[in-house]
Length: 159
Image (cartoon, rainbow, N blue to C red):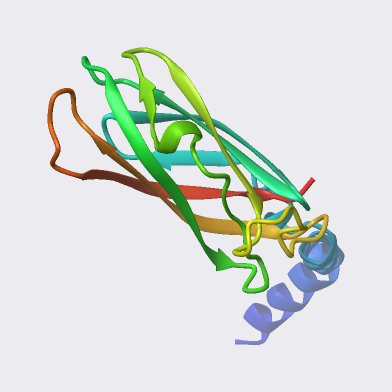
């Protein structure tokens, strides 16, 4: 029994500094390395749309969505509801002529830059904020009047 205790003590004396150094390095990395800083700007929407990209700054959010369907789509509205930050409040710029026709394979940029009163004001976001919002694109198919919706998420950091 005495030899086992001696072996354990020799092991700790020999390799203990390496174990201690590894613990310190892990602690330093945990303090300085924040996974939230790795957030990339992305938009994901359901069919028939495909999220091409998103630009987020303190005064606006621009979402580009492509019609991946085989038919022309008539977009009637696009809305953005924020999950975070809770202070954000952008609404969509009204669509020209109340609707937009998007041909197959063509991308459309949706602007979210105004407040509920319709005046151009900051959206309540500050540089460095992480944004997470739900997007809903309302549309009708060719020759149809049944309203359809494509939903998704927008996320990223405010530039």
